[in-house]
Length: 203
Ligand code: GRF
Image (tube, rainbow, N blue to C red; front, side, top):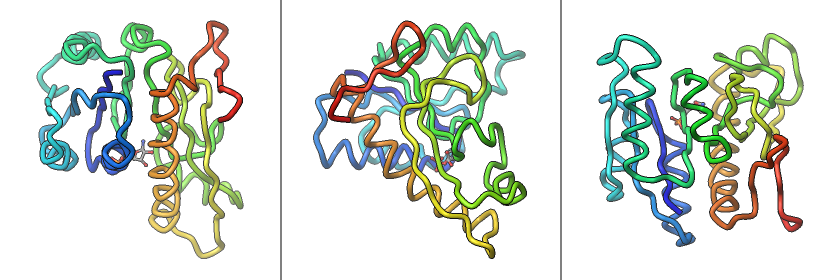
């Protein structure tokens, strides 16, 4: 399987996936890491890890349609079986999303369907919830609304702030995201035609 990873910044989830890939020697190829920002810190790690890196800057295109078209063309040069969004901070057009139906996944730092969008940790604190977490899901045109594959839960403490809570959630992201990718590589997770998630019995 060919895997392409999209990032916009730090890339710590990408890094967790690359490290686990190298440790566990999955039957897959990390074909490329692509960023919409040239200054994404994660590009350095990916390059050192020997993965081809590309930058497709959204600033070079006048609108979402033209950007997504070029991004899609760049991604498809690598013939991906799996497209991983790892902190890719762009809203994607429906056409782009539909092109990758069943082969594009994302990690969102909340227990979906709670707290879609940005500032999820502050949203959780403001809502007064006692548990929070992260969700890996297939991407559908509805923002942060795709079929859920896996979730991890963390406690929210009375003295939490956004940063402390973000760190606690991120640790769990780094645990579940590589695990989900591995299971997809092993054909043990897939998206059914009806939009439900197919998990093989052992998962
Ligand atoms: C993560 O919290 C991820 O869930 C969210 O953006 C953050 C990206 O972090 N979508 P990183 O770039 O993977 O370090």
